[in-house]
Length: 114
Image (cartoon, rainbow, N blue to C red):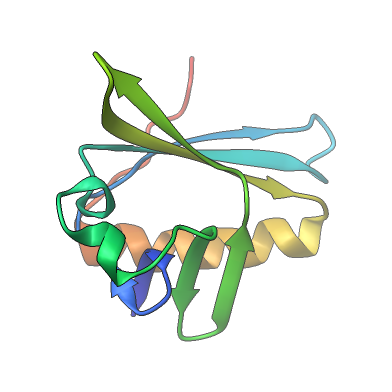
């Protein structure tokens, strides 16, 4: 199991585009998640609750970030962007285990920047 939620208990079915950066010494990094037209922005979702963060849930537990923002085009929400900050090698390893499960579940692949 590996799911992403913006409202606890409601899985996001739109697959994120994820960009990773990592410090030269490998101890810190960021993961930027972009969801185009996610379920959470669809009509009627506001009745299910408020977006209080991005929750990355898997068999090991939960990773949380509160850095979530909506992108608007012509006054209508089109995308969600969320940034997860990785502060240690241990956190990096934990995040990568989540991403491996999420990637396997959603048939994603990793492409290294050139």
